[in-house]
Length: 106
Image 1 (cartoon, rainbow, N blue to C red):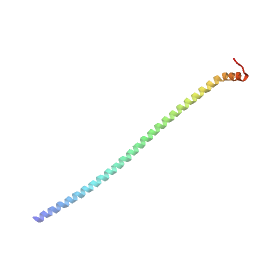
Image 2: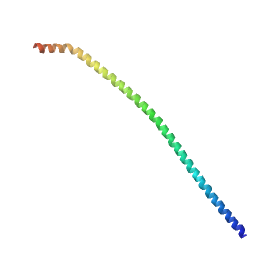
Image 3: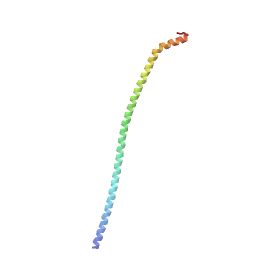
Image 4: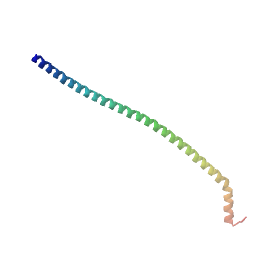
């Protein structure tokens, strides 16, 4: 019976060692799998962030172009208005300069 008990203890110890080895291997596998999934999640997040960044850059670029066009139109309109005003007042300016040069007074 002692021999059987010793054999049972030895078998139990072997099974325990094997269970520990299996658990360690399973733990390492799970850690490796989790690290791989983490890397994949990070890569996917970076890819998504780049897509969103590209979209936002495109929107900002389009907004800037619209603003630039609007400012250009406003500038041209103001220049045209100033030209018309200058043209309308040209006669008065010429007359005023003529009076000053010729010494005429009203």
